Image (cartoon, rainbow, N blue to C red; front, side, top):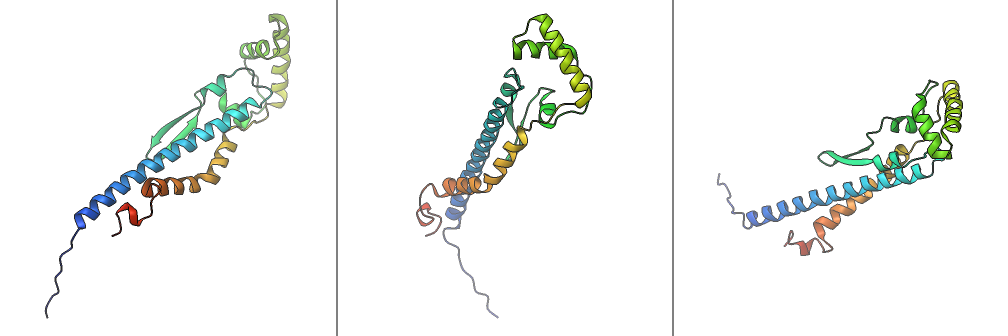
Length: 172
């Protein structure tokens, strides 16, 4: 039995072209995901601006995004109370000093007025807790709805760069 032999012509050229396309696609998708993380952070910030009990922009300013792994971004805040704003709290006795400072900033009270107001807020929190004000979860949910479309767009744009597949040189 005779074996048929054949020689592959242009395989090296094909391999370099596909490697270039792969690098472009990886970079394009990473850029798209970073953009989506930034959109999520902006959405969370907008929700925080609409919260009536946020007196300072500390939580707003502390929202950050960072790359934690390949194609994985994380949004969060280093502030302890960020999670309490997001999820609310059960009844507890909060420290008085931060409540006095919050009362001064939020309502422009004098030291005595702020202290009295903070005591009343402290008592209310000890009886009822605090209500949740989700700002990160809605931003995450909104981004989850569009991530597939945005990644597909990034792949199309990075691979084809506005050209047809034939004009990329991948198919001859």
